[in-house]
Structures are given as structure tokens and as C-alpha cells.
Length: 244
Length: 259
Image (cartoon, rainbow over all chains, first blue to last red; front, side):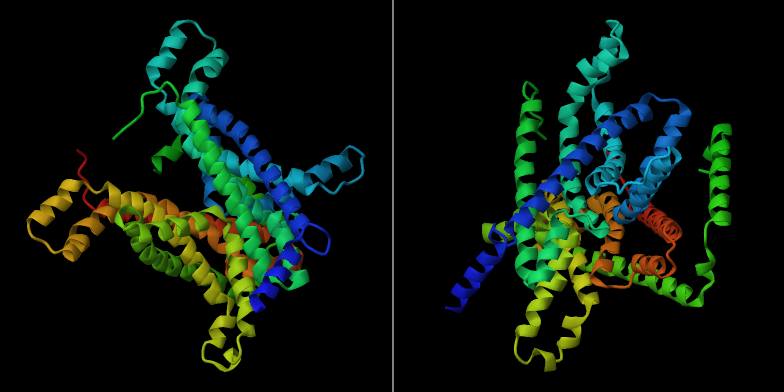
């Protein structure tokens, strides 16, 4: 009797239509996934450039990249997010004022993607550097001997070969990205954790909403794990299975 | 180490860094550092952060060993719950776990009749215990996975030899299996400790006063945006450096034989 009432009130709270908060949570989840995907993509771009810079760049490039990856990996994400968030919004607004435009409120989505992307980039640099190093050097030397230009070599040989090696690390990074979006709740952006906090403090049903958000995050992580396993199987097709 | 810094281009970079630091020191607003109230808070904050780090790593590792063992060699009724626990901890953000523990489960306790008069009430109300619990469970979840691999990676011959010598199972575990597994995770553990350090500022979100919470308070009271954050970054980098050095010392103490 009591549990039946509890169940129906929980379902009411999580309903999609306005008295329920289901739609708010799902919108937050969508924002979280969007930011994570954007940050992951930006991180991959920074990571690829960073990895190439660390491996083939000049001495100054290498030193600067070492400073970037070391600092970003030694300072908590929460603090990086705050510093970068204020710095990015400040810099943009000062730039706009210098150009004679009005100040704008930078969208939380863009700021979130930029900030998490810079953080992801540092980790991606290390993952991709390791993967490129693990590509058999004979393959790269053969391609050079054939007279391939560096860009063609990267596109046709290094990147496809290292993909299978980098995927486990990249899958980890993607999971970190989805979980790091929760930190944007601190700057008040309406991703899943912030929406949940709002729903919970309005309805006072703290346990229900935090548990529901946990289930949503868990669902994302389980689906991503399955997806990455599938991609890795595809990337490794034609390779001999490694067995210890 | 020092010699690597004395190359001309690195000297130039060091000089640029010094200029930046000097500019920040001169033009930044650091007067709040002279305030005795904030000085006491900063010391307390750093202390709390360090206590949280050491305490939760210790409790977490103590939980991770049985979790790893259950997953590596346990029967299914132990292995499945252990695996599920690790998946849930690793699949959800720590911030959400802390919210769920402190606001979610914490909000259920006052509904239990008579609990306000019991001895447990002061503990159930205090965010500190929720923070310790949340961070410890997080360590247990991540390290449980690491320990699973480590227990599996101990060569079979070692265990078989011990069994052939007639060692009881507990002695094998205590003398052979656990030490070798721990030896294997030592390099990983250093990195995980740094990750754990970087997770501690999240407890400020459930009102625990660590160094991050102190910096937030300085920011909201003095309306200075960047300087407290920079101090934070420096503090965390310094602690990270110390952790790396400690683990390097540990690893050097344990004799290595590379086959």
C-alpha cells in the first residue's frame, strides 16, 4: 500500500509532462551528451596536433606541449574549468569591446565545449602520442621511402594504423568527458547534474532525482562501452588477435 | 634534472615564466593573503584536503583488495556484485555520487523516528563523513578494477610453488599473492593518487571546508576572481609533485627484476 503510493508518486515526479521533471532531466542529458561530444571532438583535434608536435615538432614546441600536458593533468578539472571559463568569457568580451561591439553573455554550451576540450586535449595528446609510437616504424619508413608526403603518410598509414591502438585510451577519455560535464554544474550550466539539482531542490525528492540521474549517466556509459567495443572490433579487423 | 633546464631555450622560457609570475605578483590583488582569518582558513583547508586524500586512499584500497579478489577468482555470487559495484562507481560522475549520498540518502534519515535523539545523529548530519564515504567508495570502485588485473597478473607458478610447499591458503595470500599484486599496481597507484587528489575539491560542493572551499569563500567575500584560483592551481600542483616524488621513492625501494 505504502510502497504503491511511493511508486506512483515517484513516477509522477519523473513524468515527461510539466508537473513531472522527466523532460527537464532528458534535456539536461541531451546537453551533457552534446558538450561531451563537442569537447571530445575538440580534444581529438588538439590531441592529434599535440601528439604530432610532441613527436616531430621543434624543441620549443615540444617544451611548450610538455608544459601544457603537465599543468592540465596536475590541476583539478574543477579549477581548470573555473579559470578557463572566466578567462575565456573575459577575453571574448574584451575582444568584442576592443572591436567596438557590445558585450555578450557567452553561451554555456560553447564555453563548456571549449573548456572541457582544452582539458581533454592534454589527455588525448598523451594517448595519441603513445599510439603513434606503437605503430611499427617499418610501415612509416616504407611509406616515406615510397615518397609519400607527410600529410598523405598521416592520412593513409599512421592514423589508420594507430586508431586500433588508441581506441581503448580514447574510450576512456570519452567516458571521462561525459562525467566531467557534471562539473559544469558549478558554473550553473543546465546540464544533467544541474537540472537534477534544480528538480531535487524544487520538489524536495532528493533521493529520487539523484538516483534517476545516476541511472541516466550509467546508461550513457554502458552504451558507449558497447559502441567503442564494436568500433574497436571493426578497427582491428584483419589484424591477428593478440593473445598473451 | 637541473642540468636539463640550463639549455639556452629553456633559460629563455624560464625567464618568460618569471616575468609572468612577477607581473601576476605585482599587478594581482594579493592583499587578502595577509588577512589572518584567511591564513588560518588556508592552513585548515590544505590540512583537510590532505587528510581526505590519505584517509580515503587507505579506506578505498582496503575495500579494493576484496573487490578485486572477488572479481578475479571469486564465485559468481561475489564476482557479479563486485563487478556491478565497480561499473556503477566508474559509470557515474563523482559529483553526482556525492550529491546522492549527502542530499539524497542524507534527506531520508530525518524520516526515521527517534533518530534525532540517537548517538548516530551528529555523524549522519555532518557532511565530512559523507565526503569520506563518497571518496572512499570512488577509490574502491576504480582500484577494485585495477586490483582485479593485478591479482590475475601474478604468475601461476608462484602460487603453485607456494601450494606445493604446503603453505595454507591464507599464508599464500598474505606472503605471495597480495605483495606481488601490490608491487604490480605501484606505478598505477601513483597516478590514481593524483587523480584522487584532483577529485577532492568536489567535496566543497557538499559544504566540506577543503582548500577549494576556502578559495571559493575568498572569491565570494573579496570579489577577486583569478588570484585565489591561481593559488589553488599552485597548491594542487605542489601536492601532485610531492605525491609523484613519494611514489618514485617507493618504487625505487622495491627491488625490480626485469626478465
